[in-house]
Image (tube, rainbow, N blue to C red; front, side, top):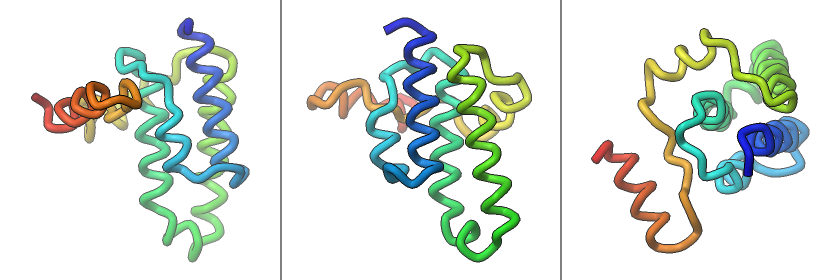
Amino acid sequence: MTVIENRKKVAELLRKVRLHVIPVREALLKFPDVTDDESITACYHALVHYEADEDLRNSDELYRDEQDDYLEFISYIMDKGEDLPDNIIKNYEKYYKSANIPHSKDIKGFFESFFRFLNV
């Protein structure tokens, strides 16, 4: 797949999560196995944070609306095939060097993801 096709796929996954069509975990498993695209990596981490904040979203309507708007914003950019703004990418780079996106569904892909997670 091309960069633009991968970004459009990510945009679709973000929208499906936001609209509660699929759960976050399913979206993460369907991410393109691209780890050199900083925009896709940032989107991956945005979804991880989205899931981690589920309790807060459920108890704070304003926070939920802000997170939903944020996912919509980044999905709009990704759907156009554009790079995410540098401030968004840099925000996630503070916490993560890479994304633990599975490379493939086989055992080799599992170990590649696992070792990347360990930064080996």
